[in-house]
Amino acid sequence: MREVTLKVKMKLPTATEVQKLEKKSLVSYIYIGPPTNAAMYGTESRIQLNDQFARVNEIPEFIASEREARNEADRPLLTTSLKVHNETKMGVVTDVKQELRKAGSFRINYSTLKGIAK
Image (cartoon, rainbow, N blue to C red; front, side, top):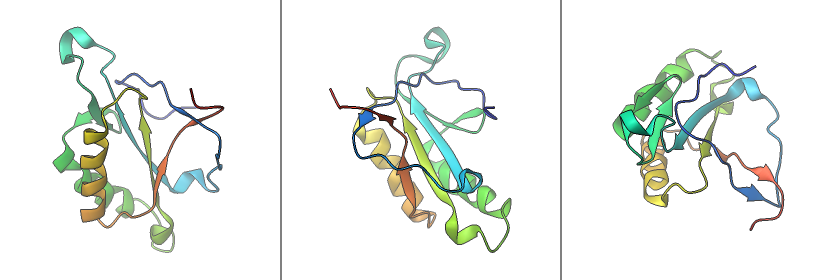
């Protein structure tokens, strides 16, 4: 069951070399894609943290709160998973990755669908 209500469209890219994550309880998700309500929010890709849209500069605070919510022994094992719509421009993703580095979150995963890339 999904804990987050998606406010961005998700059409994940496909990949051939895919691995499953071991402990999904140690994964924090960042969603990036065009808003589902284009009339209200436009068509440019947006970042969603939990149930809200966010700016790039809000990511370190999000990572800090995710760390605080976990057991201290599990904090080094935290992984940030980027779920990015396949038509999102790479500039947004690069900005997010830069903020993750600043926050000290170096374990990054890209969510994909298994299949042959088109």
